[in-house]
Length: 170
Length: 131
Image (cartoon, rainbow over all chains, first blue to last red; front, side, top):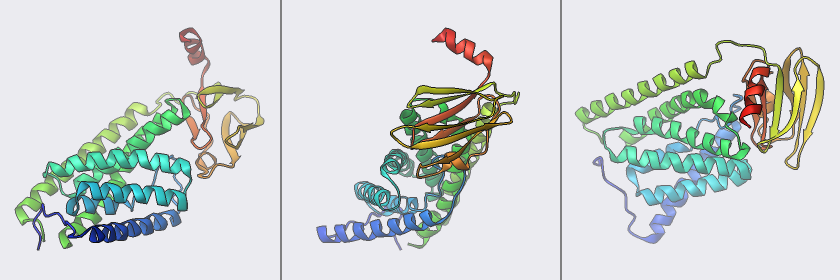
C-alpha cells in the first residue's frame, strides 16, 4: 500500500543505478518488441510507444530526474540498436517534449496515468512533427498533423489504460 | 489500490475529458486539412533539403530517380498520379505511401529530406509573385 505521492528513493547510489539499469533494460525490451511489430501506416513517426509505459509509470513512483535519465538512455540505446541516427533525433525531440508535458500534467494531480499518457502521446508526435518540418525545411509534413494528433491520442490512450492498471497494482 | 475510490473516479473523469478534447481537436483538424475540392493537380514539385529539385508534369508519364548524398528515390508518374517506386531509406514510408495526384497532396521521405508536393497552376502564379 503506497500513497499517491510516494516516491521511491533508493538508499544507496548502487540501488539508484541498479533500479535505473533495470528500467532501461525493460524499456529496451519494449522498444525491441515494438520494432518487431509491422506498423505500416504511411505516416512518419507513427508508432505504438510501448516504451513510454516505463516513463509514464516511472513519473508516478520515481524522481523526475531519474525517469528523464532512463528515458534518455533508452532512446539513445534503442536508436543505435534498432534504428539510425535520425530516429534518435526524432525520438529525442518527441521524448523530451512529452516528458516535460507529462511531468506538468502529473504535478497537477488531477489526472491519472491515462490522461497523462494521452497528453504525452500527442505531445510526442507534435515534437516529432516539428523536427520533421525543421529537417525538410518545409511545412509540408504538417499535412500529417490531423493523423498524428489522432494517433497520439489513440496510442496514448492504449498505453494509458495499461499504465493506469500497472499504477493501481504497484 | 493506491488511489482512493473517490479520487479514482475524479481523475478518470478528467482523463475522459482530455480524451474527448483531443478526439474533437483531431476531428476539427481533419475537417480543416481535408481538401474538399479534390481538384486534380497540374504538376508535382519535388524538393530536397527545402530546395526545388524538379517539377514533373502529371500528364506525361515519366520515371525519374532522385539521387542525393542521402540516397536514392525512384519516382514514377502515370495516369496523373505520382508515387515512389523504390528508395534506399530505412523506413520505406515514402514507398508504402499510396500514389498521389490531387492538389496539395504530399509524400515526404524524411531520411532523404525529400518532399513531393502536388500543385496546381494557380498556386504557382501566387508563389511566383510572393517570391
